[in-house]
Picture 1 (cartoon, rainbow, N blue to C red):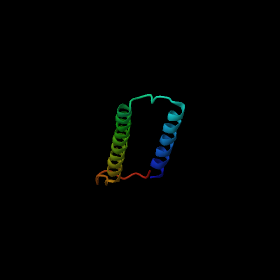
Picture 2 (picture 1 turned 90 degrees about the horizontal axis):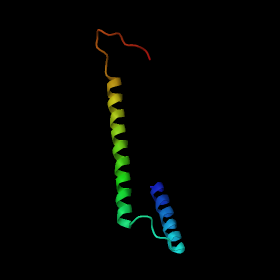
Picture 3 (picture 1 turned 135 degrees about the vertical axis):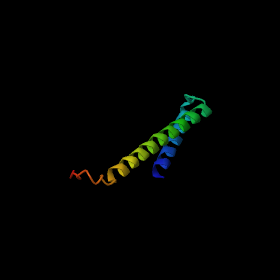
Picture 4 (picture 1 turned 45 degrees about the horizontal axis):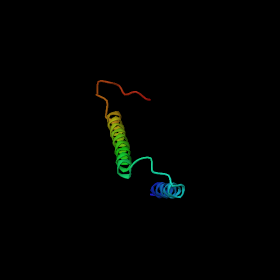
Length: 74
C-alpha cells in the first residue's frame, strides 16, 4: 500500500511539473494507461508463474524417496 501511495504522489508531482512547464505528456493518456496496465499484468503473470514453479519444486523436493533408494543427506 505504501508503494502505491508513493507512486501516486510522484506521478502527481510529475503531472504538476508538466503543467507548470507547459510540457505535453509524452503519450496520450489512454495509450499511457494501457501501457501501464500491460506492464502490471505482465509483472503479475511472471511473479505468479515463478511462485507456482517454486511451489512445484518445493513439493517435488519434499516427496519421499522410493524405498529401494537410500536417502541422501544434503
